Image 1 (cartoon, rainbow over the protein chains, first blue to last red):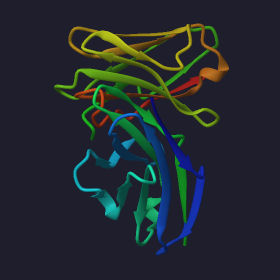
Image 2 (image 1 turned 30 degrees about the vertical axis):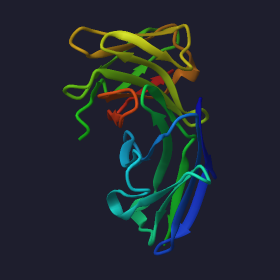
Image 3 (image 1 turned 180 degrees about the vertical axis):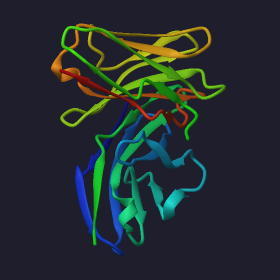
Image 4 (image 1 turned 120 degrees about the vertical axis):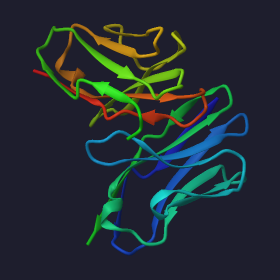
Length: 112
Length: 112
C-alpha cells in the first residue's frame, strides 16, 4: 500500500526567501515520486519526478527535490521565492503497476 | 498545453439534472483518470480507465458513471445533480499506471 502526507496545508514565505514544502511517503515497493503544481484556474502540471535515478531531482522554475529513503521524504525546495511561485503544490507517489496517490496539497503564498 | 482536452470549459445547470463531461487524452496515452476538486474536499480521485476498461475506483458516487470509448476518449456522466456537486472536474492521462499524469484544463461545474 502507498500513501503520501504533505505537512502544512498553507505555507507563507517572503519574496526572495527559501521555499520548503514537505512531503513524506509510504510505499511497500521502491516508489516513483512526483511534485505537481497548480496555478489558479488551471490543471495540475508536472514540476519534477523521481524514478530511482539521481536522488536530487531538478525541476522547472528553479525547484528541486531530494529523495531520502531513510526519512521516507521527498521535500520540495527553491532557494529564492518569486511572486509567480504562488500556487498549490501536490506531492504524489506511485510505483510500477501501482496507481498514483496524491497528497492533500500545500498552498504557497509569497509576500512582497 | 498538456495535450489533454476537456469540454465544456464551464457548465451551469440546475439540481436534479444530468450532464456529460468529455475528455480526450494525449495522443498515445491509454490511461484516463477523472478527478473532482472542490474547496472543502480538495483533489479527489474518482475513477481510472485503461484501454477501455475500468481499472480503479476512488470516491465516485453512485450517481456518477464514466466510460472510455474505443478511440480512447472518455466521458464522465453526472446525474441527479446536487448543489454539492459544484466543483472543478479534471481529466488526466498517462501512458502507464505509474507514470506522469497530464492534466486537462478542467470543466467547472456550477449546480444552482
